[in-house]
Image 1 (tube, rainbow, N blue to C red):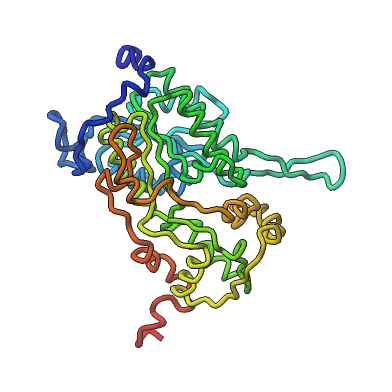
Image 2 (image 1 turned 120 degrees about the vertical axis):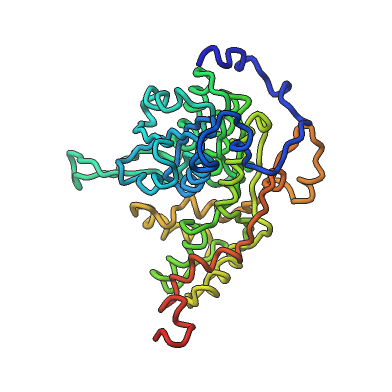
Length: 391
């Protein structure tokens, strides 16, 4: 390992390739390995080893599936038991994935996962502080203590991974951040922590590839599903400051495909940024109405100031997997958009260019194409209620 890339830490961004063309017919690993075995794709040996952190999250399961489909040997770090990651096992051919327990506070356990990897992908992130009850000596004899904070998950853990990649001479690091990281003065601690996480990663590993998606939608999302779930529980749905802030959601599988294409040619993207965003922006009010058009739920949408919404969020944040937190309210008061318009991305000069999904041959999926597939379940009677003969 030490001899493989002994000169790597000496590289700087000034030495990175800026004009080399690349094919968008990706992934192509299974077509370029002379000693490859198997039938191609999933049953193949792609000849690359990837360490994946955060695989059990929303984006992680899609990235894992893509790696497995391309025959990539994947080392998956997990903090849970076998039930936490069993849904990832079918993604990989037998023997092509190794699941290892690690603690984010045990550097050696993370090093053990990274040890043999050519590429490390970090998807770790958190939008709320994980809390647990502890006993106290005074009334009420119980206290909520923070187990893992937003800052630790979004800054300290990525920093540790980047430092390990440098120490262990890992060839490439892909760090998934957020488009919200572009606003370093955001009212949201989550957005600020994402910005600081990027900074620490690049400080420790300057040639890391940064992926910045906007809010992601998909079957397990906390965007469109949130509106539908809130309508199941509450008759009135608050729109933070009227829901006028804009967001440009991107389909989660498009982001995963983009990451897997970076894995196919990681040297091309060293020290570069890839922005992932959907084809159109919407206000949160428009998204809410769009969701309820599909689900046929009829809650009352109310224009509520952010400070008032926080009263409810202060209670909901204590749920095990909180529907809403005060920090989410802060995030929803601000636009959540890519740094530039699509036209400005396309007009960039090659030197220092910020890549987009389109540069990698991934076309953004419209939200209208996917939303019904997972929101119809919130309809009373499901989608069969509209067809004769089922009731």
